[in-house]
Image 1 (tube, rainbow, N blue to C red):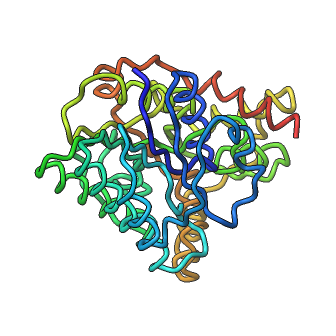
Image 2: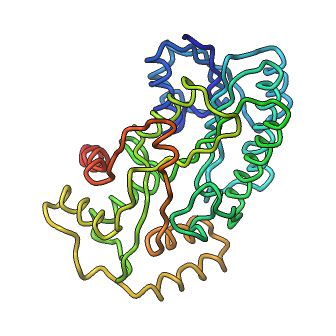
Length: 323
């Protein structure tokens, strides 16, 4: 059934891919876009969606817009991501306060509410492995803190009747994204990536898998307050992934000379901490410590197609070679 959907975050990597799926399914999309956003970031959709010039950090403007509109569903993907140079007030306004305004609108109109959270609510490196929905939350940086607070808000409103589902992707990969997977590929292409001389398991999310999760969460009846960790079928060892990327780009495995003791990565983490750089601390952690998740519940309930990071990561290397 065609639905009128408010979709936030369409100019981001996850948002634009979810938008394509929703449009292919015949839904009507209304998309807030920050006023200073370059048009090329959403030009593929300009004749297919209704755009609203709106900054989610402007809570009054957002409240005024929502008071005059209602939707069958709200899919909230927009967020200020971690490691960026925003003030704590900006993070809180966009990631927490705007979320509450959207929740209030969904409550008033009995709309479905789908929230894109992050496995970062368990910390960059979870305290238990594989992490699951009962793993303790760790606010190890301010971005993760805001995601935890937003989830708490949602669950509080669920008790009052909100119809909500929380989707927690891991680091997502696919063509046209310049995040961690792109940086990993670039460093391997330039032979600048150093890896620990110990096994490290990491757990990524293919963008096609995440699209499926949002599509299924909209279409099938789910218990309100459900939380789904979305990631590939199983984790991969970062050395195996580095060898795969190098083989795709250079035709041979990655250099065995690019390994260091984990001690050096711990030193890097401490230095990043001292410099208050969440971004660099995360970079040291993500390539030197294991982080992976139990996705069995999401796979079973949402009936997601299983995707293996190797060879699915080829979408990234193929796109990278074309740049």
